[in-house]
Image 1: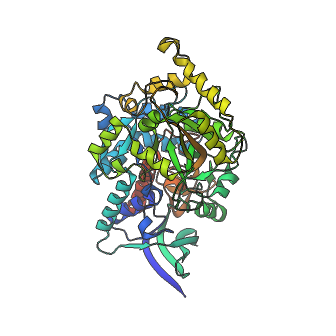
Image 2: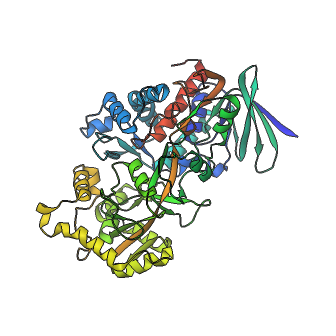
Image 3: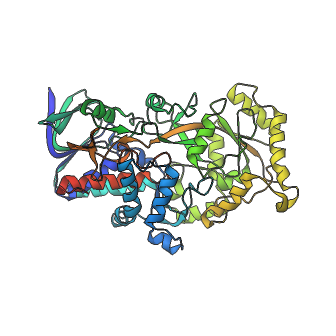
Length: 539
């Protein structure tokens, strides 16, 4: 026996892109089935855990902070930093659409849903040579992405009070159905009961995420010309395994592009209480920490510093002799700069504790540092560098770290300060000083000082690995989020949104993201699909 259901639209995937598509379709009077593999408690996908940063263009908040942004400026930054190919038609069109419409389609729309942003715009991905975000654009949702998900789920339930929404949790879609050349539904299975299910719909929307939750898929699609580490942590959703859009490409001859382009992070460590196998936490690396190889030597010749080019950082880490690196810092640096991306470890923002957030920003986040010291064996603390070296070797079960080498590494950096600021000539210090020129960064970045500064201890070493996160490639789509075949023709009845669509066009970010483009990309592609389905209007 199998279960049969029908609706106007079927959405495959319950992440933020699927939720927004469903919400907009319900508001347009459509009936919707949303099938998601996860549990009801985890409805919202990766967005439920994410931090909630968004790259938005020419917003009132930017204007309030006297940030001179514009859609054309953002597009220039996007194309240059992402190294987009001008002949890559649909990614280029989606990049332009994002730059021109993120304010109205995301910032204004989210405010109408009751979502608020923190009163400061951060400056991330500036580029190693000033080729990234030329101005600050990173807006942070007050309450993190968890609040975003809750607001939109609440709106979803409000819009479905007349019973036009059917939510199916623990359901895995295994294939799509076609009739007269048009996609008309899907077949799947209830993974709790084993019951087969047949779903009929005039339009089907793929919102199943990317490939980065599967290490097998990551490795299979990894560009041959780029170094790949032997081991990686998983910072993506474990159900983001690429099965759905690979099925569409293989069986319906849809165009699947740029699958080797990924947005991973260079500094992760295992989650102390993992939600799934290989689960990692992605840190926001301390700018003032020394980034070391497995022997305790500083990686160079250009030092690794976060906030400028994540794509480059990942390649440098992946090229190391062993699949881990070390961050060497002290308590003074950690309490001001150490942070972990996501909702779970940003409770002051997540729980909207503004006064406590301000106090921790101004006085130091000892709470998080002590928590990691207590919970994670990869977060090592010692009063001496020699003691730290011993702990580092114990963790890796090696003799890689020579205490004398670690001491020499710290001494070489500290030598920059012997003649005061007049004789400093270290590229990491230059990057730090540049970052501190922007107010929000100055609050979270230490004034450069010797690592062995008196009273700044104890010393800390964090054992880091590359951690997977997001896919930049996916199914090629037009500006109505219709899936295109290998001849650039739309497949009737089939749409794709969010990460499965490479956040628009099959690869709108190119090789690099300006960071914070993913949640807005989910929202914009979802709204485009809903408009096209509900009104039959194409861009």
